[in-house]
Image (tube, rainbow, N blue to C red; front, top):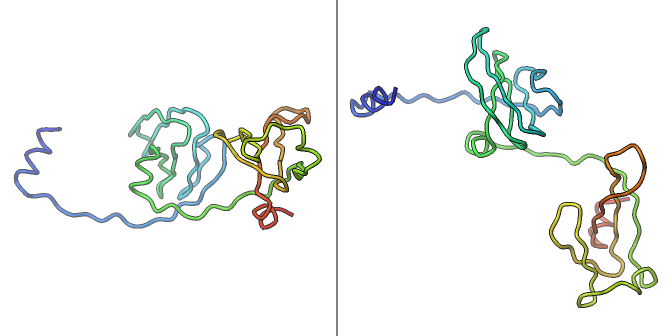
Length: 167
């Protein structure tokens, strides 16, 4: 096949084709095989994705968490690594889910015994890194992914940002 491609390139007999534009809708599903035409999902774990067209195997591909699986017009399901998606698709708007969190405001009283770094509280938020908080900011707790109600992670929200994004 490589020889054929080289030969066609040299002969300058390449044609130009433009793909039609389709809009795919995101669906949060556990099994990509349940996608419907013009929908997609994002993988939550490493997965072997099999593409069949007209009942014939076209492709098998090992994809990783964060890669995309799409369903085309002919119900063909295929995967792309994130880098390929970024090159081939215009990514659209996303909307955050309504999430309820327990939490509290950081006050002089409840932070008086904490070690402060330059008058700021330093925490490791649930997404990693370091977060710097001050008095009057908020600390929100996230539930563990288990049936009990104990908290495992937390993150901070700056006071003015909290007032604009939480109620």
